[in-house]
Image 1: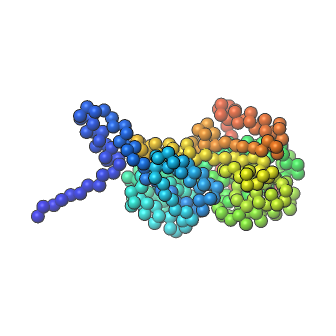
Image 2: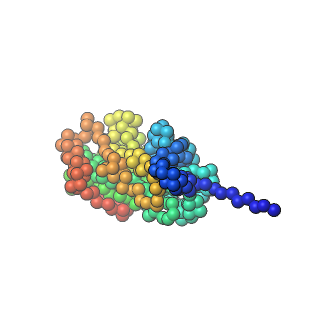
Length: 336
């Protein structure tokens, strides 16, 4: 009885074979082979896609899809207990790249990724990359956070700033600490009230925490989570935005915002997969301002003119490599 052996041709295997054939025939490198059709990309989100953090990833992937570079699908509100199953389903569907956040499922996510070495994984993570195919990223927007802190420190009149965060993890802590340092740089008398709601998406709980801070004298709020700006609007005080610009939703309330732009990270990963050069790496640096991964905006009608000018001057120093914002992953604490 004759035996027939079947072969599974991955993108990497096919490209390697094509290069070898082209070289043999004297045709040179087939540069376009890896991009002969859009990459298949999937994303896994543990929160609603409207949540500010994942909305940045979704926006960048949709931009790549609009260019024709990828086809894109996603799953939202995926429970931690279901994360492994969804990862496997996308890998089994032949996705070229799977994007997500592995903060609460680090070991499980890395285990699943290792089972599918031909699939590229790019995950938000507090830890490092891992062979053969697990790359990591993070929203390193501590630089614009520092700049918004400078503006907030100059704008507060009570010298009390309330700060509401999701979880006290490095990704949140470093932004809040940078903001605090920026505020103290221009106003050594400012004090901070810090609360974590232990949820990534609970606007009512964040709003309640913000109200408590206002009752204690805060006249400006740092809105790391949704819900905080609602409290600021209701009480007629100012707020600092995080990750996305919500000024249009809260006119007269958002003093400044530190923005995250995920496009440089996503585009670099897509390029690596498309050219068969994807390797486990830390993509965190692509969120730095020098790569266009972070920026800040301010409402010039609300921000003190001198403070805004000082923040823009400091922004240029950062871009010129003349000033480096401290990275402090320790849990920020109230100072009053």
